[in-house]
Amino acid sequence: MHEKITGAALPSVMALAFLGDARHSLYIRRMLVSRGISKSADLNAEAQKYVTAEAQADAVRRILPYLAEDEREVFRRAQNNGHLNKPKHASGADYRAATGLEAVLGMLTYLGDEERADELISLSLSESLPEDPEKPTL
Image (cartoon, rainbow, N blue to C red):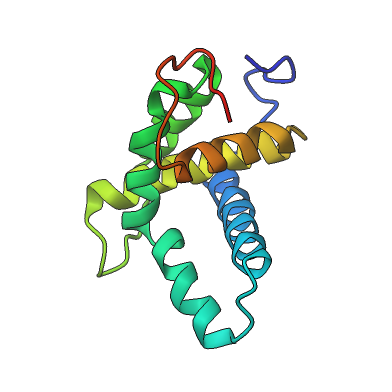
């Protein structure tokens, strides 16, 4: 639970999702560049494997058991937000789940908890998840 959270202390969940989308995209881009990929076409093709609504929905489903109570609440509020303009290529469920993930990452970024945001993204990309959701080992 984050100490800085109080009812009106956070921006709207859609503003958090906007911020979280940037956080997630930056993490993925940094990861791809660190792998030595240098051609922009290759970078963009690889990034699509991680930043689409479908990919983010898969990622969030993997880490849901690892979210703290306040993270779950922001996820739920963003996922249930009625003002979503989903793209044509994504299902409504995937788009809502991706928006929830982005809102959680946005909340963490807004609160300055970059380490936790990176931990969740890293965990969502892991091939094997820790057995105990209370104590992720990364």
